[in-house]
Length: 283
View 1 (cartoon, rainbow, N blue to C red):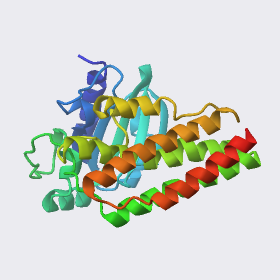
View 2 (tube, rainbow, N blue to C red):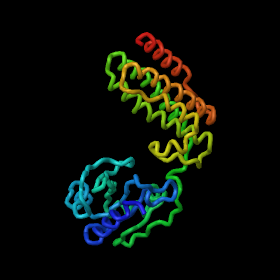
View 3 (cartoon, rainbow, N blue to C red):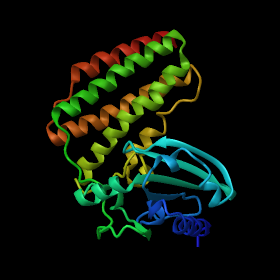
View 4 (cartoon, rainbow, N blue to C red):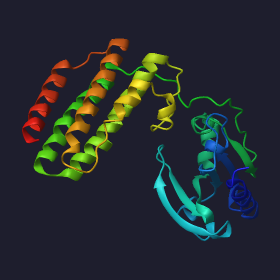
């Protein structure tokens, strides 16, 4: 039994006694069979309530669950707000707090499936909602990108290869590193996902946001990533940028060929050539 089980019981017991809470639903690693929870996993809990603001922007209710050590609000990938909390013994909980109306509409229209389909457990239900019977499956079936989507992202990537180089040459190390290791890596991650689907098929599960990438990405991708992140130093940034560019190009060309999507060779040649000249002169 993982340590979070006792905390989960406290959350459910609190929900039973608080009339403002209509349902408590467990999602995430503790509710799924694939890549299940371990001792480091947090609890992902959906609270269905009448007025989410009362739970999002106050801490008093949390103090009735356990010893509160840390609490803040941040947006989820889907754009909703969640309250992230740490209780005693560094046990953390992500509370996704949704109104009854939002949940009812999502269940009725089927939109809730994307949130629930990797696995969920209804721990407390005062609503009588018709919760769907779902087999744990990837959240979305992969769709081949359009030529416009693919081309726009590739152009975006090569533009920022030059942009980050200019920042490095100007001495803006923080901005250059952030661009290479954060912004450009989001474009690289998208291309990694496209590549893996091109190799393994549309049903291949690439999760989301890079989760478990070391499990589902092929060895050449992992190998390419090892050199693509930089330390905070002027001498390290160029090699990390070149490695990022090389890996992106390799994957993008494979995706281009697999799906018959035009690859902007002229853009790649111009941008990469300019970067190489500038960084070789500046190093």
